[in-house]
Length: 349
Image 1 (cartoon, one colour):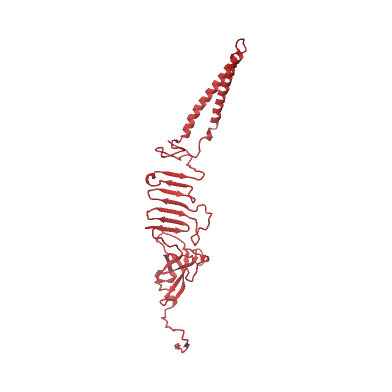
Image 2: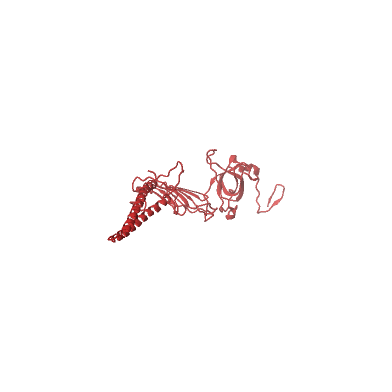
């Protein structure tokens, strides 16, 4: 059996080693190993637990493995985020995931918390920096046929640059630590923007029922499509602004069939109003003259031998009434003129 220097007997299953004399404090100043661990706590700058009072701090649980294979969980306290750019005008800020209630663990199991990489400033374990992250084991297997590409997602915002150099932006709505949308009722979920090969651009809502498409690539690169579910509004400043739609040929703007042209409403209505006013006045005059003639003929029809004038008088009376109805119809049409023109969409020569 082994004995201590003082003569104490040590059981056979206990091994004794001579300490190297280095204290725990000293060892904490010699951390030069590139470590990784799981975020287990966070401290806002305005909370008592935050040391620097300017930036967020995080506790990271790191698994140490000795030369003999022994494993120990050690917490690196109050770690700060490293800066990608290191400036005032140029900087980036992000927050790691912290969701212990969703399966996080400090016993070597990754759970859903962010797994981050650490390096210590001046080898001081109390000045550890989060310099990045490791790929989480909960991610799906990567595909081998995507080619040269980039995929980025943060809190439901996904950016994808594929091997063709196309840029796709998608908003799924805020997500939980598992990557699932928090609310299925998010009205803006799945809104997207795509910059596609061939020079086209597509902006769409979540259901893809409303969109703006500028060019579709290939031969239709000059085409623009604009779709709305129910209402499409176009507006400009009332005093100085204009909304102008210009078509170089029949292929530019198509209303109804391919032979329908866009009417210059204001100009058309001014000319139509002048014409209808003149017609109405003249029809009213003709009606008065016909009615007067009809009255005279009807009166003369009472004389001996003038019985044939009765039918003529009746015919003139009927014609006068018809002319009067024409005049009335024109006046009714003109009285509703303000309802014929849009106050939101205008055309300009």
